[in-house]
Length: 174
Image 1 (cartoon, rainbow, N blue to C red):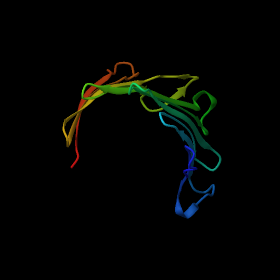
Image 2 (cartoon, rainbow, N blue to C red):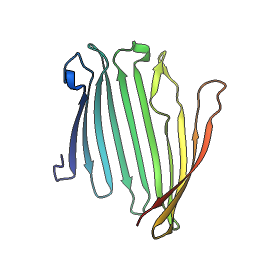
Image 3 (cartoon, rainbow, N blue to C red):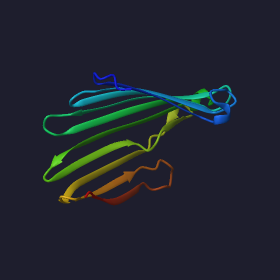
Image 4 (spheres, rainbow, N blue to C red):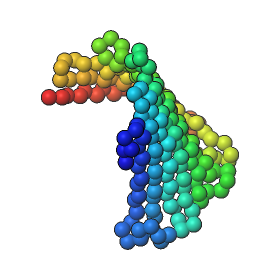
């Protein structure tokens, strides 16, 4: 719902048609509140997923961005979760990201870093696997943009190498 004064809110529900909003079925609920100004925005999100008749997984996220007058933008977010059915030493998860982009020459340069999915607590500690990316998006002509990207995905498993990849995206508009 758009309140018209830069504030918006949203609610969501998902569940099995046969067991809507009962403990017999698996239900998921979500809510989001956001404020979007001229050059910045922030949002808070809450989600709950029933995993059994007596346990729920809950998640809370805070995300935001700021665009400077120079054309550079920064965005960041963090999510924390509580795995309801797990024992205390393995019941928390965390995910985060930060990104930076802006105009450079005829195109846009961007870099980002974040977790490789949610990091789940194991034995009271959280193993951190990060991903990194850098891209440059540039217009070839009025109807086509090319975006080469390179990424690195860490792997915390002993003996497994980190993964590096290159992609190229081409966008057409008519």
